[in-house]
Structures are given as C-alpha cells and as structure tokens.
Length: 292
DNA sequence: CACTTGACCTGTCCGC
DNA sequence: TGCGGACAGGTCAAGT
Image: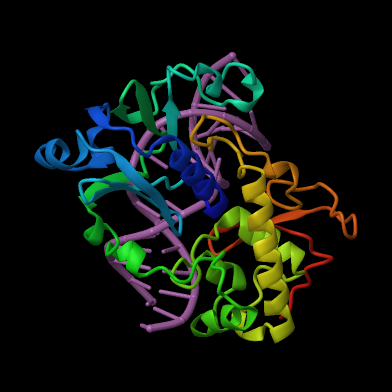
C-alpha cells in the first residue's frame, strides 16, 4: 500500500475510532505478522487503551496507556480495518462501491485485535507488513524510524532545505532519491511519478544535474500531490483501504501513474512506462525530457 | 559511503 | 482454456 497519504488516512481514521477503547483479546491466524511475546501482550496490550495514533514516515505508532506502543508497517498490501458492530453503517453497507472488504476475517487476515465489541483487522495479502509491541520510547528508536529523513509534509521544511537533502545522492536518478526514506520520508512509487510529471523532470535525471529551479518545482508539486491525495483518502490501486474499509479516490486525479498509453494532459502525447531504480515508472517523454 | 539488484510473499494479468 | 512469466503501493541485505 501505502505511501504517506494512505498511511496518514489510516492514521486519521484510527485516531477517531480507537482512543479510549480497551484491547480485550487477540486472534493470530498468521502469528509471524505480530512480533510480540504473549507475556508482553498480556501485560502491556490487553486491558489497555489507545491514547494516540501517530505516523512516522510510512509507519504507524498506536500508543497505549501502558507506556507501550503497537508499531505497524503496512508495506505493500497491509490494511488496518476497524469493524464496529455498534456502527454497522460505517462499514460496507450504504456505499458498497466504496468498500473493498466485507466479511472479515478473510484469507488475508493475519491478526485480529478485539477492542471492546469492535474488531481491528490487520490484513496483509503478501505478508510483508508487520506489527511489533514495544515500549513507546523503544519503538521510536527502531532503526527504521531513526533513519528517516524529514517528513515530506513537515510544516517547517523549506524548498531550500528540500534541495539540500538530496546532495549526498547526486549520482542517483532523482526518482531513486525520492524513494529513499532516509532522504525524505513518505514518498513512494505513485507520488514520485506524479510529482516528477508535475515538475516536468525526467525520472532518470541524475540528482547532480538538477537545477535549483527544478528542486523548487519538485518540492511544490510533491506537496501538492500529497495534499490532494490525503483530501481524496489516498490511492487505491488494488488493496488499499482506510480504517473503515473504504477505498481512496486519488487515482482518479493521477496523471501518469498506471496510465500507460493515456494522453498527457499537458501535451497529449501518450504516457510511457519504463523502469527506473528497479521500479515501474510512468512519465511523459515530451514534457519530461531526458538529459544525457 | 553511494549505488544497484534481488529477495521477501501472494495474487493477478498478459501473452502465447 | 491453460500455463508461464512479469509485475504489484516497500524495505532490507548483500553485492559491486
């Protein structure tokens, strides 16, 4: 799944649904997805309530009143969906076209948290995702979190600072550097392609060849697509759903991602798909000129 | 250190 | 229709 806008959408959903409710039980149809000792689960999860839900890059922290946290990474196909029997209208019914999941648990369900009467399902078709239970201070110090660059939507980040983050990756294609979470946190394959199209930069352009004005444009476009996507509840290509099981609508606004052969809205040339940094990459060869 | 490639898994789609 | 291969929102480890 999940790049910054999708994780942020899940965070907001859980933030509205979880705090104050007590974890009372657990099912683990695929135990490896939850890295936690049963003794720690009994002491620091069960009987405790959520106090806050935070996002760090593409990771989530569910802070508990025990001083411990559930740390979640959804990787490619992870979902966190809360089903509340008190509010069945939240889930599926009414807008079935918005819902991608019903009848949980299903065969991708890896962990089920019982939270009062409600159920929080961790589904993950490809099993790349994980959940850990750790003391909050320790969770924040996981290598993955310590290594993160500034959040792509950090309020205090300026265009000048944005450009400076890329210095040490001067030999990389700009797309590879954008995907590097230690440079800047939160950008993934979809929004890298969309932002590079907006800034009219070829994805394979070496960082060292970019001009200051191009970094300015990239910074502006990146934030624009991330904000728009959050407004739209994220991107659902295949699996992604929010905390209520609903898909995101951003791909209706996407210009290049998953749109090979469709016309570029700037110049009407067909969008092309190539491979950059080992990832499928969509761009307009007319608007985003390659520089040798 | 910077950079690239393949591996982790399951499911789906495309071409023959 | 069937089958094999490529590919899918992300990281990591290992290689050069």
